[in-house]
Length: 334
Ligand SMILES: [Mn+2]
Image (cartoon, rainbow, N blue to C red; front, side, top):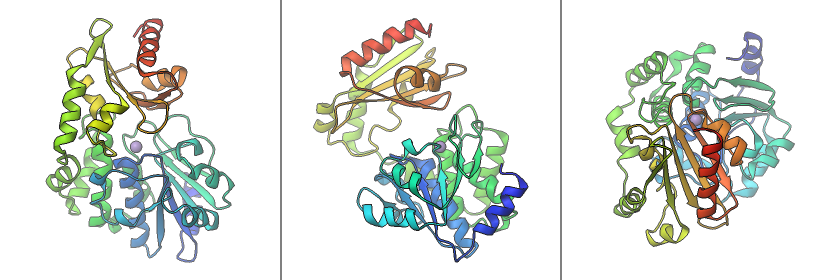
């Protein structure tokens, strides 16, 4: 948490006169949008207006959240977004810790004069004016709750805030299953339910959103899942042509990588996908226990993230990337 002195200073910055923006990462996920909107609604409850700005569009299954449709998407509104960041007195940076993770917002953030406040749970944060970084907490949305507690404002938590933070925690913990899900996480979830968050409604709005074409795409991926290294590593893949054939929509492949981890004995799952427009391979890694995919991806695939969940990128072909991956697995004894 921020120090008491920092909290006091942040408190003096949070006034209705100050211009406040909230930024989150490229390809926003449930925690990115949930934490950003949760914070926006919290500030609103204090009588302070803030705008949420994201680099690019996010999946439809997150747009039911209160005020999700008011989020400013910089790829569609470049000038509006750039001007707001330049004019901001306070810039909250949520669920990322390096300007390199926020696409076109990165340059604007670096040049901006406003006070930069980081709240994030990824590894190895870069410097910001105020830093609340904790890699053990499973979701930035949970950190927003801790921030509200530290500000002595728990009484302000309302339904809008509760729905957003619940969604962020639920999605980043894979439905309260992943390793850093703690008793504290569940206590906060209980509080959010008491404020009106409806688990059945939130789960259904967020996860029961398959289309037939997405299930066909999933069937294709599952049909050729490969398990290597004595059953410890699962490999999944998709080509650009397949994405096109099945009418790929943003978010359609979200969660595919987790199917690899659901195989008994598998400790690491990797999903390789050709980007729809550009010539690179997008990689998602998931792992269990001490298998550190953050380090692995940083070392070999220009990426990073968390110990058990990380992203990466390769400029090789799809088959070439998978061959390199298999060779690295042997080198690293995975
Ligand atoms: Mn997160």
